[in-house]
Image (tube, rainbow, N blue to C red; front, side):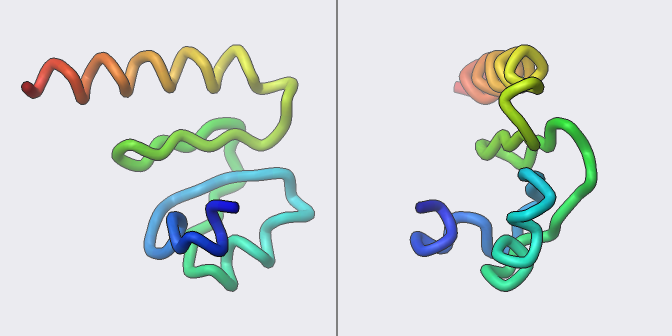
Amino acid sequence: MSLSAQVVADRNVTAYPGCKDDLVNAGGHFKSEAVVVDRNLVTATHYRDNAAWIKATLNQYEALNLKD
């Protein structure tokens, strides 16, 4: 869904390796990392990375809300 909504265009992202071409074709900058944070977008490669993804998401949420 984020691909067709142009959410990943010019953003650093990660995903399951099989999705790499779709992300790159949508204008994303694919990174081979478990979790990638790019401003308000937090992506992960696999459900096994959920703990790291949740931690990064909460950290980013806190950081973005402290700016207000």
